[in-house]
Length: 148
Image (cartoon, rainbow, N blue to C red; front, side, top):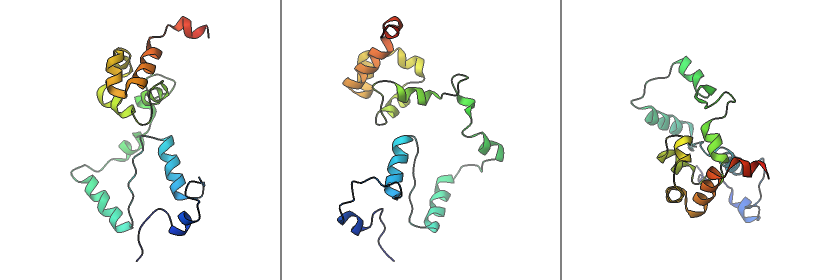
């Protein structure tokens, strides 16, 4: 029985702690969470504990049907025919980061409502700098953008 951790102490002592290595599990997890900020990870130290965790998470929830499972992740929730999800669009907007996008999602119903917020309301949600960038982007005239 050994202690549980992501890194072996000899690995850290060798000064490789800051290096990104595509074969290293910690690097893979870091890249996964950076590229997919909505992903939630559950880490456990054994199969038995994992089974217990999933039992707790599923408590009072019905078993999914095959059709429900297949439907998850399809493009039926897309905003337009191009297959872009509103979240993908949101994350591309100036001032929106992986650190503040959840505040927008929790307080704004859709992108249309987001575009109607004042600069101060945006600043209250995502900070002065981010709010200013997003407000300026949302209210910049299309002619100005096209002439650049």
